[in-house]
Image 1 (cartoon, rainbow, N blue to C red):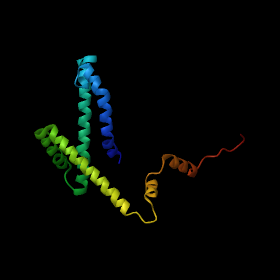
Image 2: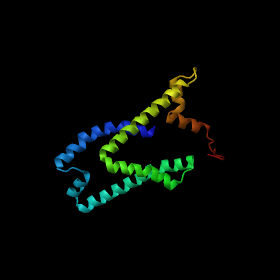
Image 3: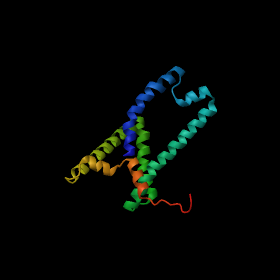
Image 4: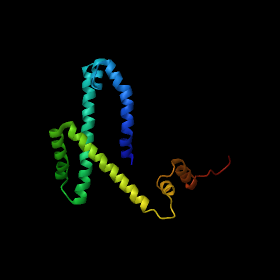
Length: 166
């Protein structure tokens, strides 16, 4: 559920960025943050920021490919290297051939699958609730307030007592 929050927060973030950052870049007569860094500092700063961004994106892409590959290889008994190649090569190919438009449509389809999956899971959970449990009771059981959880854990934990004069 924490991942889906990113998808729902993204439109709000885009609106905020459009109102704040885009006019700033327009007034600075630059198109990218890296161009602004070069203009404000120097080309070494732009290069360093670009390299750090590319490194972080490469590591993130590695995790995105490796995580499902590890799971699939264990569950299906496949070779891990072949599974990584089976996931990574098609993604690289459709990105190279289709460009940004292919990636955008893949993201749209992925979002549809995520929303449909969450909707289906919620529907199944609501339908399968026993008659004596309301939806609010189920939500309270599934996600209790942090404060009540802390107070419960404090009251049940053993506290050391002092002995001797005070």
